[in-house]
Amino acid sequence: MTAGWRGQLALHYTRDGDRTIALDRHSGPLRVLQRLYPEGPGICHHVLVHPPGGVVGGDTLDVQARLEPGTHAVVTTPGATRFYRSDGAPALQSATLALADGARMEWLPLENIAHSGCIAGNRLTLDLAPGAEALGWDVLALGLPAAGDPFVRGSFEQQVHLPGVWLERGRIAADDTALLDGPLGLAGRRVLATLWFAAGTALPAARRTALVDAARELAAADALAATCGVTSAHAPVVVLRLLADRVEPAMALLVRVRAAWRRLAWGLAAEPPRIWRT
Image (spheres, helix red, strand yellow):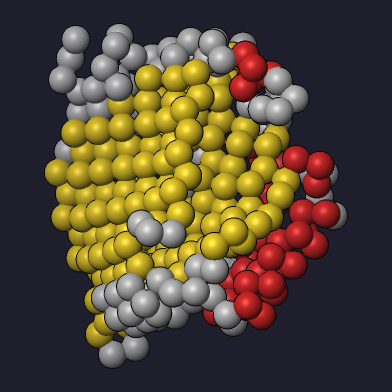
């Protein structure tokens, strides 16, 4: 059994006048590919890459992002993160986003693909000061059934945590047919996604309602309407969840809702990360 790769990336965003600047430090196979400013100097778009191209048993990828007051970062990846077969050791991908008062962050990685035989986990922790706000998503594809790679062995664990407010944690095992195929589970669908808007303090009721209503309106007009829901069970968080058969329609809906939330919450245009268009 191999020890596996360990990749670490620390991102530190500070404000220099009207510009968000970033310092990054990395060790192992995890680093920044590009830093872009398509919206002007106040919003830093970062593209993160993992050069090996996949994660196997024993690998650990860890991102630590710290945003100082008044900064705004948009972080994405150029492609899916693929979790491959394990010989017994788990693989773990984790990120901690720590935002100071007045900071904003958008955490928008492309999908995770859990190939059959993987034993893996994906964890996200949000540390939001009062006045900080973050928007992000998590998209998981279980295997690639259309390519002859169904998810029939292994397991995948997911966790999103806003301490003291919201903890979402689940484990999907390939042999749990009641969960994977049952009508109260995934009902045969192999793509699941969560989109969230979170704040360091309670969102005003009118603002929460506007975010929920905008997401519900877009979901109702989408082909995924029957497998999509939007809630705000806690005052600092709004959450959209959906199930799909393929990644592309799920991601398309998330992109539309993200654009609506950006406009409503921050008065910003959609501005999809440039890497998605190359």
